[in-house]
Length: 260
Image (cartoon, rainbow, N blue to C red):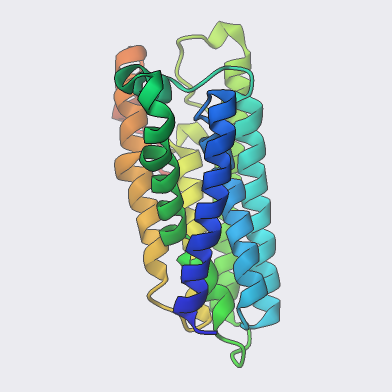
């Protein structure tokens, strides 16, 4: 089976998953569950690629394991953070804008299909890493990919842990977290997520699949320009007066020593 055939089949799998998730969201009246599913969805589609692709088995096992660790942790963390708190304000605003009688079906295309297509496009390095390279043994690029993934996981999981602990203290309400990993970058979790996906890109390149690296580039652009850094900072600037000083002294994305 060709690369394109498997990738298109992956799109079908993702759209089926998203359709089922949409039906559940109608029952719950909560579109926010799509955010919780994001990491787990990549685990499922990577598992599909694992079953269909005939790449180097050792690389496939490593990639599948790393995707599972990343995706399950992310979904578990978002579930722990969001379940019981109602629908996210973004979706509540859409629900108010379009009205209950229309939003139930608009949400399918606006949110579930859109995120499904993005998941499909971003997932392509996971297929590239597992599809080819069956005659090409693991080498230094694979080890570099593992090192980059570990670095990213430390920043993403560590940043989430430090932020959760900071928010759990009522004395920190309205304050800005500027210690730990957050001392060196304003978004250690987003930086870590990007590193993880460039780790997958290196696995794909090591297997001889170079164009799928564009999936990791797309993920990074979304993190920085669309749904991550830029969106969050617009909100924080208005809600936390101390954030402007934090911006002045702290690197936006890549970790670096704070300015004095």
